[in-house]
Length: 112
Picture (spheres, rainbow, N blue to C red):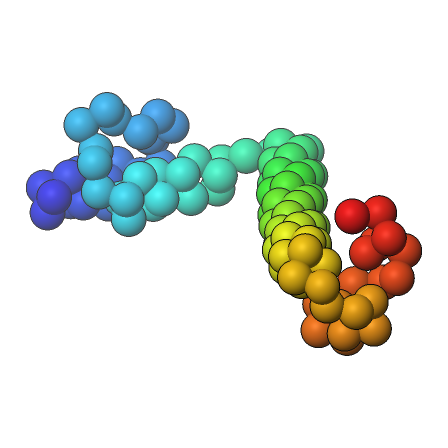
């Protein structure tokens, strides 16, 4: 990689494409930065808008995934409580005790 870095340093202002042989992530980033230095103001603004849009989309996806995980967890906990309530009901536990121990509502237990 030292010879690739040396080549980059000597020729950075004339390089606009990252050679396929460059595997070093730091060197790839340096090529991208050097290329951006030659961009017009309009190109830089377009790039910034696209970057912001991409980060926003990533944030939306991560938020949706987190909410889905939370929803799944809540549904799983409720399903577990319902199964426990079914077992308690089958063993003759009174409604008050089932509500108290499972956290389910009277309506939920009545549906079982």
